[in-house]
Image 1 (tube, rainbow, N blue to C red):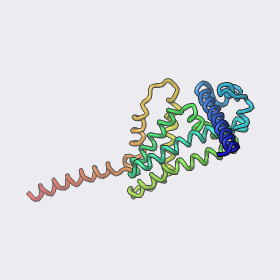
Image 2: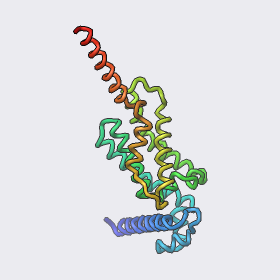
Image 3: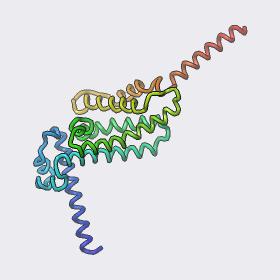
Image 4: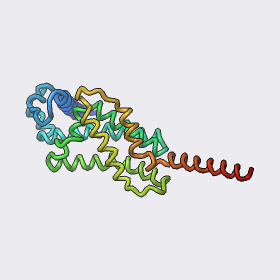
Length: 228
């Protein structure tokens, strides 16, 4: 490698390190105060750079918000890929994705709340476009799993998008009501209850099968009595 190439690579690494430091500083400050009220000067000071450096890397505060949203979804998409490899059964895959989603919301709530709040949803047009693009890609995995389940549950004519919206709406409402509020909460219990609410008797035919078996058993008993 020539000295020029080495210098170029070194500059690129320093630039990436600075960008990472700014994002990390922003995440730390977001845990202390609302993103809307945070100041770029405070973010720059926490990152150990000049305020102008923030604008050099992210153009403006909305650009910083888009980078944070991108950072959040990089983790989410990576987890989805691992879940797909681990679960061939669509029901198990859907459960695992829902579990990961609520865990990531709680683990990264200062950042995640931007994704589920009006700050990101009603940012500038570029921010909205970025969020819609990420959401479409991410939620498509859930719709695909739901479509696979519906193929096995031929009596279900409810659109997969309805289940998707109910699932995400329930999880996000739970997150907003509980995370970082000091309230005692049980995420696993909530997910189990949400799963039962959405899928028992709708996308699961286990209850129907049990009821059918019970009827058949009673009929067998009647036939035996008649034969006797």
